[in-house]
Image (cartoon, rainbow over all chains, first blue to last red; front, side, top):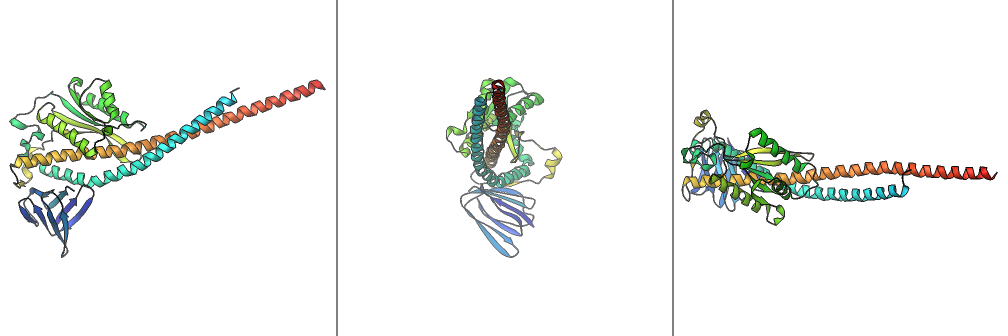
Length: 80
Length: 296
Protein backbone atom coordinates (compact mmCIF):
# COMPACT_ATOMS: atom_id res chain seq x y z
CA UNK A 1 0.00 0.00 0.00
CA UNK A 2 1.11 3.55 -0.65
CA UNK A 3 1.28 5.81 2.36
CA UNK A 4 -0.30 9.05 1.32
CA UNK A 5 -0.16 12.33 3.18
CA UNK A 6 -1.76 15.51 1.93
CA UNK A 7 -1.66 18.83 3.75
CA UNK A 8 -2.13 22.47 3.00
CA UNK A 9 -1.15 25.43 5.13
CA UNK A 10 -4.32 25.21 7.16
CA UNK A 11 -4.69 21.53 7.94
CA UNK A 12 -3.87 17.93 7.28
CA UNK A 13 -6.26 16.94 4.51
CA UNK A 14 -5.61 13.25 4.31
CA UNK A 15 -3.32 10.72 5.87
CA UNK A 16 -3.69 7.04 5.18
CA UNK A 17 -3.05 4.16 2.85
CA UNK A 18 -4.13 3.94 -0.73
CA UNK A 19 -3.69 1.62 -3.70
CA UNK A 20 -3.24 4.21 -6.35
CA UNK A 21 -3.05 7.94 -6.71
CA UNK A 22 -2.91 10.45 -9.48
CA UNK A 23 -1.22 13.85 -9.34
CA UNK A 24 -1.49 16.89 -11.62
CA UNK A 25 2.26 17.29 -12.07
CA UNK A 26 3.85 20.08 -14.07
CA UNK A 27 4.57 17.91 -17.07
CA UNK A 28 1.24 16.12 -17.06
CA UNK A 29 -0.79 13.79 -14.92
CA UNK A 30 1.28 11.24 -13.02
CA UNK A 31 -0.20 7.98 -11.85
CA UNK A 32 1.54 6.47 -8.88
CA UNK A 33 1.37 2.85 -7.90
CA UNK A 34 3.43 0.71 -5.60
CA UNK A 35 7.20 0.81 -6.17
CA UNK A 36 7.08 3.96 -8.22
CA UNK A 37 10.46 5.52 -8.83
CA UNK A 38 11.36 8.23 -6.29
CA UNK A 39 10.63 11.65 -7.61
CA UNK A 40 9.90 15.25 -6.74
CA UNK A 41 7.64 17.47 -8.73
CA UNK A 42 5.63 20.62 -8.60
CA UNK A 43 1.91 20.40 -9.01
CA UNK A 44 -0.30 22.62 -11.10
CA UNK A 45 -3.99 23.29 -10.79
CA UNK A 46 -5.96 20.12 -11.26
CA UNK A 47 -7.15 17.34 -9.07
CA UNK A 48 -5.47 14.72 -6.98
CA UNK A 49 -7.23 11.39 -7.10
CA UNK A 50 -6.69 8.50 -4.78
CA UNK A 51 -8.34 5.16 -4.43
CA UNK A 52 -9.35 3.59 -1.16
CA UNK A 53 -11.07 0.22 -1.27
CA UNK A 54 -12.64 0.67 -4.67
CA UNK A 55 -13.88 4.22 -4.26
CA UNK A 56 -12.00 7.10 -5.81
CA UNK A 57 -11.68 10.33 -3.88
CA UNK A 58 -10.75 13.62 -5.39
CA UNK A 59 -9.06 16.74 -4.02
CA UNK A 60 -8.82 19.91 -6.02
CA UNK A 61 -5.50 21.67 -6.32
CA UNK A 62 -6.28 25.34 -6.69
CA UNK A 63 -2.94 26.93 -7.41
CA UNK A 64 0.17 24.86 -6.99
CA UNK A 65 1.91 22.43 -4.73
CA UNK A 66 4.76 20.07 -4.24
CA UNK A 67 4.76 16.28 -4.36
CA UNK A 68 7.42 13.88 -3.24
CA UNK A 69 7.41 10.13 -3.75
CA UNK A 70 9.93 7.97 -1.98
CA UNK A 71 9.84 4.30 -1.09
CA UNK A 72 6.06 4.06 -1.33
CA UNK A 73 5.50 7.23 0.66
CA UNK A 74 3.67 9.99 -1.12
CA UNK A 75 3.84 13.42 0.46
CA UNK A 76 1.86 16.24 -1.04
CA UNK A 77 1.90 19.88 0.05
CA UNK A 78 -0.58 22.32 -1.39
CA UNK A 79 0.11 26.04 -1.45
CA UNK A 80 -3.32 27.22 -0.55
CA UNK B 1 2.08 50.73 65.79
CA UNK B 2 1.61 50.56 62.02
CA UNK B 3 -0.42 53.37 60.63
CA UNK B 4 -3.97 52.20 59.90
CA UNK B 5 -4.44 54.60 57.05
CA UNK B 6 -1.24 53.62 55.28
CA UNK B 7 -2.12 49.94 55.44
CA UNK B 8 -5.53 50.65 54.02
CA UNK B 9 -3.98 52.60 51.17
CA UNK B 10 -1.60 49.76 50.42
CA UNK B 11 -4.42 47.24 50.31
CA UNK B 12 -6.45 49.26 47.88
CA UNK B 13 -3.48 49.83 45.59
CA UNK B 14 -2.70 46.11 45.51
CA UNK B 15 -6.32 45.40 44.77
CA UNK B 16 -6.05 47.65 41.74
CA UNK B 17 -2.93 45.86 40.56
CA UNK B 18 -4.67 42.53 40.98
CA UNK B 19 -7.49 43.74 38.81
CA UNK B 20 -5.07 44.74 36.09
CA UNK B 21 -3.12 41.49 36.11
CA UNK B 22 -6.38 39.57 36.05
CA UNK B 23 -7.51 41.49 32.99
CA UNK B 24 -4.15 40.95 31.30
CA UNK B 25 -4.44 37.25 31.93
CA UNK B 26 -7.84 37.20 30.24
CA UNK B 27 -6.51 39.09 27.24
CA UNK B 28 -3.50 36.79 26.96
CA UNK B 29 -5.82 33.81 27.22
CA UNK B 30 -7.95 34.82 24.29
CA UNK B 31 -4.92 35.74 22.19
CA UNK B 32 -3.32 32.45 23.11
CA UNK B 33 -6.24 30.47 21.74
CA UNK B 34 -5.97 32.27 18.44
CA UNK B 35 -2.21 31.82 18.19
CA UNK B 36 -2.38 28.22 19.26
CA UNK B 37 -4.89 27.31 16.60
CA UNK B 38 -2.78 29.11 13.98
CA UNK B 39 0.19 27.03 15.09
CA UNK B 40 -1.76 23.77 15.05
CA UNK B 41 -3.12 24.49 11.61
CA UNK B 42 0.35 24.94 10.23
CA UNK B 43 1.89 22.00 12.06
CA UNK B 44 0.87 19.35 9.52
CA UNK B 45 2.34 21.29 6.62
CA UNK B 46 5.61 21.98 8.43
CA UNK B 47 5.84 18.37 9.57
CA UNK B 48 5.41 16.93 6.10
CA UNK B 49 7.88 19.41 4.65
CA UNK B 50 10.38 18.29 7.29
CA UNK B 51 9.84 14.70 6.19
CA UNK B 52 10.32 15.53 2.52
CA UNK B 53 13.56 17.38 3.15
CA UNK B 54 14.81 14.55 5.32
CA UNK B 55 14.09 12.09 2.54
CA UNK B 56 15.77 14.02 -0.22
CA UNK B 57 18.66 15.17 1.94
CA UNK B 58 20.40 11.83 1.44
CA UNK B 59 20.56 12.29 -2.26
CA UNK B 60 24.18 12.99 -3.09
CA UNK B 61 23.33 14.99 -6.21
CA UNK B 62 21.86 17.67 -4.02
CA UNK B 63 25.03 18.11 -2.05
CA UNK B 64 26.21 20.55 -4.65
CA UNK B 65 23.50 22.95 -3.56
CA UNK B 66 24.82 25.97 -1.63
CA UNK B 67 22.72 25.05 1.40
CA UNK B 68 25.13 22.21 2.04
CA UNK B 69 27.91 24.74 2.28
CA UNK B 70 30.02 22.92 -0.24
CA UNK B 71 29.56 24.84 -3.42
CA UNK B 72 32.56 25.35 -5.68
CA UNK B 73 33.70 21.94 -4.59
CA UNK B 74 35.61 23.25 -1.62
CA UNK B 75 34.65 23.51 2.00
CA UNK B 76 34.13 26.86 3.60
CA UNK B 77 36.91 28.17 5.71
CA UNK B 78 36.49 27.47 9.35
CA UNK B 79 36.21 30.33 11.79
CA UNK B 80 34.15 32.66 9.65
CA UNK B 81 31.08 34.51 10.74
CA UNK B 82 28.16 32.74 12.30
CA UNK B 83 24.61 33.88 11.86
CA UNK B 84 22.21 33.53 14.72
CA UNK B 85 18.49 34.04 14.28
CA UNK B 86 16.64 35.03 17.41
CA UNK B 87 12.90 35.07 17.65
CA UNK B 88 11.69 37.04 20.65
CA UNK B 89 8.64 39.09 21.50
CA UNK B 90 7.73 42.73 21.18
CA UNK B 91 6.26 43.06 24.63
CA UNK B 92 7.37 42.14 28.09
CA UNK B 93 5.47 40.91 31.12
CA UNK B 94 5.63 37.35 29.94
CA UNK B 95 7.74 35.78 32.61
CA UNK B 96 11.18 34.49 31.72
CA UNK B 97 10.24 33.97 28.08
CA UNK B 98 12.82 36.34 26.62
CA UNK B 99 15.40 36.01 29.37
CA UNK B 100 15.60 32.29 28.60
CA UNK B 101 16.51 33.11 25.01
CA UNK B 102 19.35 35.38 26.05
CA UNK B 103 20.59 32.85 28.56
CA UNK B 104 20.62 30.14 25.93
CA UNK B 105 22.36 32.49 23.52
CA UNK B 106 25.20 33.07 25.98
CA UNK B 107 25.42 29.37 26.75
CA UNK B 108 25.59 28.48 23.08
CA UNK B 109 28.35 30.97 22.44
CA UNK B 110 30.36 29.49 25.26
CA UNK B 111 29.71 25.83 24.46
CA UNK B 112 30.22 26.12 20.71
CA UNK B 113 33.15 28.48 21.04
CA UNK B 114 31.90 31.22 18.73
CA UNK B 115 33.91 34.37 18.45
CA UNK B 116 31.69 37.13 19.78
CA UNK B 117 33.05 39.59 17.28
CA UNK B 118 32.12 37.34 14.40
CA UNK B 119 28.48 36.84 15.13
CA UNK B 120 25.82 38.31 12.97
CA UNK B 121 22.45 38.63 14.58
CA UNK B 122 19.12 38.33 12.79
CA UNK B 123 16.51 39.35 15.22
CA UNK B 124 12.73 39.52 15.41
CA UNK B 125 10.96 41.31 18.22
CA UNK B 126 11.72 44.42 20.21
CA UNK B 127 12.98 42.75 23.36
CA UNK B 128 15.82 40.90 21.68
CA UNK B 129 16.58 43.86 19.44
CA UNK B 130 17.07 46.10 22.47
CA UNK B 131 19.15 43.48 24.23
CA UNK B 132 21.58 42.94 21.38
CA UNK B 133 21.79 46.60 20.59
CA UNK B 134 22.66 47.35 24.19
CA UNK B 135 25.39 44.71 24.15
CA UNK B 136 26.84 46.00 20.89
CA UNK B 137 26.33 42.96 18.72
CA UNK B 138 26.39 43.19 14.98
CA UNK B 139 22.71 43.21 14.04
CA UNK B 140 22.33 42.42 10.35
CA UNK B 141 18.59 42.25 10.40
CA UNK B 142 16.16 43.54 12.96
CA UNK B 143 12.45 43.81 12.74
CA UNK B 144 9.56 44.33 15.10
CA UNK B 145 6.21 42.65 14.73
CA UNK B 146 4.59 46.00 15.39
CA UNK B 147 5.99 47.31 12.10
CA UNK B 148 2.62 46.34 10.74
CA UNK B 149 3.62 43.67 8.26
CA UNK B 150 1.98 40.25 8.30
CA UNK B 151 3.94 37.49 9.97
CA UNK B 152 4.32 35.68 6.69
CA UNK B 153 5.96 38.73 5.12
CA UNK B 154 8.22 39.22 8.12
CA UNK B 155 9.30 35.58 7.93
CA UNK B 156 9.94 36.05 4.22
CA UNK B 157 12.11 39.12 4.72
CA UNK B 158 14.10 37.43 7.45
CA UNK B 159 14.68 34.34 5.32
CA UNK B 160 15.75 36.38 2.33
CA UNK B 161 18.29 38.25 4.44
CA UNK B 162 19.71 35.07 5.96
CA UNK B 163 19.83 33.11 2.70
CA UNK B 164 21.44 35.99 0.85
CA UNK B 165 24.19 36.31 3.43
CA UNK B 166 24.70 32.57 3.49
CA UNK B 167 25.00 32.30 -0.26
CA UNK B 168 27.38 35.25 -0.37
CA UNK B 169 29.44 33.41 2.23
CA UNK B 170 29.21 36.23 4.71
CA UNK B 171 28.12 33.67 7.26
CA UNK B 172 29.20 30.07 7.51
CA UNK B 173 26.45 28.63 9.57
CA UNK B 174 23.03 29.62 10.76
CA UNK B 175 21.57 28.77 14.12
CA UNK B 176 18.17 29.66 15.37
CA UNK B 177 17.29 30.33 18.99
CA UNK B 178 13.62 30.41 19.74
CA UNK B 179 11.08 29.27 22.25
CA UNK B 180 9.43 25.96 21.63
CA UNK B 181 5.89 25.54 22.76
CA UNK B 182 5.64 22.31 24.75
CA UNK B 183 2.44 22.85 26.66
CA UNK B 184 0.48 25.71 28.12
CA UNK B 185 2.58 25.49 31.24
CA UNK B 186 5.89 24.83 29.62
CA UNK B 187 7.85 26.70 27.00
CA UNK B 188 11.51 26.16 26.58
CA UNK B 189 14.22 27.96 24.65
CA UNK B 190 15.87 25.78 22.04
CA UNK B 191 18.66 26.30 19.62
CA UNK B 192 18.82 24.51 16.33
CA UNK B 193 21.25 24.44 13.46
CA UNK B 194 19.53 25.50 10.29
CA UNK B 195 22.33 25.80 7.79
CA UNK B 196 24.36 24.25 6.31
CA UNK B 197 22.41 21.03 6.00
CA UNK B 198 24.17 18.09 7.55
CA UNK B 199 25.52 15.70 4.99
CA UNK B 200 24.82 12.14 6.05
CA UNK B 201 27.47 9.45 6.18
CA UNK B 202 28.50 7.88 2.93
CA UNK B 203 26.92 4.61 3.95
CA UNK B 204 23.52 6.23 4.12
CA UNK B 205 24.00 8.02 0.85
CA UNK B 206 24.72 4.87 -1.09
CA UNK B 207 21.65 3.18 0.30
CA UNK B 208 19.14 5.85 -0.59
CA UNK B 209 17.78 5.58 -4.06
CA UNK B 210 18.22 8.31 -6.61
CA UNK B 211 15.54 10.87 -7.19
CA UNK B 212 13.95 11.82 -10.37
CA UNK B 213 13.51 15.54 -10.34
CA UNK B 214 10.90 16.42 -12.80
CA UNK B 215 12.20 19.03 -15.16
CA UNK B 216 9.80 21.81 -15.59
CA UNK B 217 10.62 25.38 -16.38
CA UNK B 218 14.33 25.04 -16.36
CA UNK B 219 17.30 23.63 -14.70
CA UNK B 220 16.94 21.04 -11.94
CA UNK B 221 18.84 23.19 -9.51
CA UNK B 222 16.22 25.87 -9.73
CA UNK B 223 13.55 23.51 -8.52
CA UNK B 224 15.69 22.26 -5.69
CA UNK B 225 16.59 25.82 -4.84
CA UNK B 226 12.94 26.79 -4.58
CA UNK B 227 12.14 23.73 -2.52
CA UNK B 228 14.95 24.46 -0.09
CA UNK B 229 14.12 28.16 0.11
CA UNK B 230 10.49 27.40 0.79
CA UNK B 231 11.50 24.85 3.36
CA UNK B 232 13.59 27.43 5.15
CA UNK B 233 10.72 29.88 5.09
CA UNK B 234 8.25 27.27 6.30
CA UNK B 235 10.53 26.37 9.15
CA UNK B 236 11.04 29.93 10.30
CA UNK B 237 7.37 30.76 9.91
CA UNK B 238 6.46 27.79 12.05
CA UNK B 239 8.99 28.85 14.67
CA UNK B 240 7.45 32.30 14.78
CA UNK B 241 3.98 30.85 15.21
CA UNK B 242 5.29 28.62 17.95
CA UNK B 243 6.94 31.55 19.67
CA UNK B 244 3.70 33.53 19.43
CA UNK B 245 1.66 30.81 21.07
CA UNK B 246 4.34 30.33 23.71
CA UNK B 247 4.49 34.04 24.43
CA UNK B 248 0.82 34.29 25.24
CA UNK B 249 0.87 31.07 27.26
CA UNK B 250 3.84 32.36 29.20
CA UNK B 251 2.15 35.70 29.78
CA UNK B 252 -0.98 33.92 30.94
CA UNK B 253 1.01 32.01 33.53
CA UNK B 254 2.97 35.06 34.62
CA UNK B 255 -0.20 37.08 35.07
CA UNK B 256 -1.91 34.20 36.86
CA UNK B 257 1.00 34.07 39.30
CA UNK B 258 0.90 37.82 39.77
CA UNK B 259 -2.82 37.72 40.50
CA UNK B 260 -2.35 34.95 43.02
CA UNK B 261 0.55 36.73 44.70
CA UNK B 262 -1.48 39.91 44.94
CA UNK B 263 -4.23 37.94 46.65
CA UNK B 264 -1.77 36.54 49.17
CA UNK B 265 -0.38 39.99 49.84
CA UNK B 266 -3.86 41.38 50.38
CA UNK B 267 -4.63 38.64 52.90
CA UNK B 268 -1.44 39.34 54.77
CA UNK B 269 -2.08 43.08 54.86
CA UNK B 270 -5.68 42.58 55.94
CA UNK B 271 -4.50 40.56 58.93
CA UNK B 272 -2.00 43.29 59.79
CA UNK B 273 -4.74 45.92 59.40
CA UNK B 274 -7.12 44.02 61.70
CA UNK B 275 -4.43 43.53 64.30
CA UNK B 276 -3.54 47.19 64.25
CA UNK B 277 -7.18 48.20 64.54
CA UNK B 278 -7.69 45.81 67.47
CA UNK B 279 -4.63 47.24 69.23
CA UNK B 280 -6.01 50.73 68.78
CA UNK B 281 -9.37 49.70 70.20
CA UNK B 282 -7.77 47.97 73.21
CA UNK B 283 -5.63 50.99 73.93
CA UNK B 284 -8.63 53.24 73.84
CA UNK B 285 -10.56 51.01 76.26
CA UNK B 286 -7.57 50.96 78.60
CA UNK B 287 -7.49 54.73 78.46
CA UNK B 288 -11.17 54.98 79.35
CA UNK B 289 -10.89 52.49 82.23
CA UNK B 290 -7.89 54.32 83.60
CA UNK B 291 -9.79 57.57 83.38
CA UNK B 292 -12.80 56.11 85.20
CA UNK B 293 -10.54 54.70 87.94
CA UNK B 294 -8.83 58.02 88.39
CA UNK B 295 -12.18 59.81 88.80
CA UNK B 296 -13.39 57.30 91.46
